[in-house]
Length: 312
Image 1 (cartoon, rainbow, N blue to C red):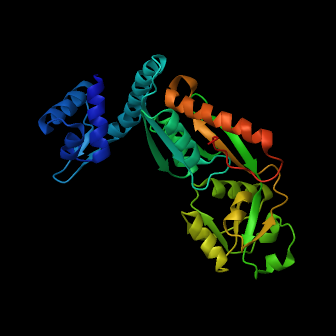
Image 2 (cartoon, helix red, strand yellow):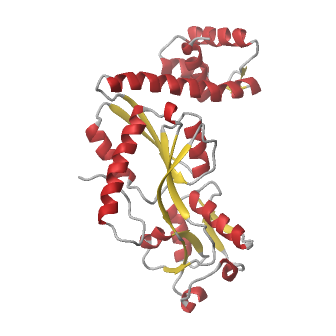
Image 3 (tube, helix red, strand yellow):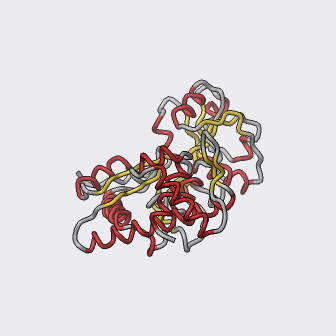
């Protein structure tokens, strides 16, 4: 099995089209088709279902895709490791993150990384925490900033960045705001909730807190971005339970502490592959992040989580 066969296979799987994949790879369509046929002969099974409009993966193709992506990621890491030993960091840094992540200032961190390593191409993707964990484990991302997750330690490691309590946000005219007291999950059982998709870290933290308290809740208004959530709460259409740092994003809203949730909290982590699969670019970014975090610990008092970014 040749690496170029795997590269061609992954490209066709991503584009779902032979012509587009051939153009992207800058090879002839006939050569690409021959490469895929050779791979199918070697594996003794079809990898694609071909139609006049598109191609889709067979069950065998889906099984191969995850392994092919992991193999190609390891090959890229090997090339980048050799370049790093020679004193030049090259290649690609593929980073994933949730929106408004706590404990790290992503844009500032990437700007500092680019200044230090201008030959590394930066790619950024924004997803929910569950999807980010899958992408890192599969080798499609070098690392990600996300909510803590349980994963196979042979494929994924979690490096803690910060932890903060969850807070209830509501409109100032809401009955909870008028009461002005800390709230337990039991106090919110009959409320209308605004929340994120279940894949998102804040939603997962809130679900865990309510499950630990034995309280069921229904999310009536589900969104996929922070500003929509804040807008809905600002119109008094529901309440939201979010990480504490969200309260600074809309000062007009009332923020009330959430109590009686045991150890449930919003913990931000860096998700990275196993040490042998971590790319030099990912190691360089983590080193930069560690340096910034040490600086913040030296000057930040206890309180809200502070985004970590490099020194100017």
